[in-house]
Length: 214
Image (cartoon, rainbow, N blue to C red; front, side, top):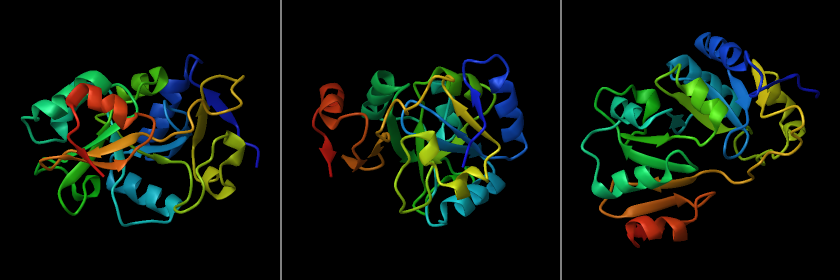
C-alpha cells in the first residue's frame, strides 16, 4: 500500500512526531540501522508494539538521546569495559544489555532484570529523543517475518497501525543500512554476543580486548 511520509529534514517533523508519540501512537521511521517502529516508554506503548509484532515474550530495545540518560535505567557504577564501549561506540549501532535499576517498570526489562539500551547515530532521532527519557525501538516487521529494507516492503498490516512514516528525505529510495545493531549482553563476567550486526566484533575487540563469547 502507498505510504504518506514525513521527512526528517523538514522543519516541523520532530514536533509532529513527538506529539504523536506523546499520544501513545506508533511511528515508523529510518534510523542509523534498519527501518524501525518507535513507541513511548509506557505499558500502552509496549502493548501496541506487541500487537503489531505479534509477540509478548521479550522486552524491546530502549533508545536514549544522551549518555546522561543511562542513569535513569541502569544500576551504577558501570564497569570500565562497559564505559569504554559507551565512550567509543555511542552514538552508534551498538545495543548494550545491562542490569536494570530496581525501580524500572517490568515492561522495560526482561524477567532476569536486564534492559537493552542504545544511543543512535542519527540526527533526526537524536533531536526527537531530546523530548523523551527514551523510546521503545524494534524492527518494522512482524515477528519471524523478513525485515523490510525499503519503505514499500513494509507489511501493510504494520503500516495501518502507525501514525507517521518518517524518511531522511523525499529522494530516499533505499534504507541506508541493511544491518540491525550489534547486541552485547554485558551483565556477566564476559560479554555475550547476542547478535553481531552493524558494529563488527572485530572492531569492538580493538576497544576492550577479546573478552567476548558467543
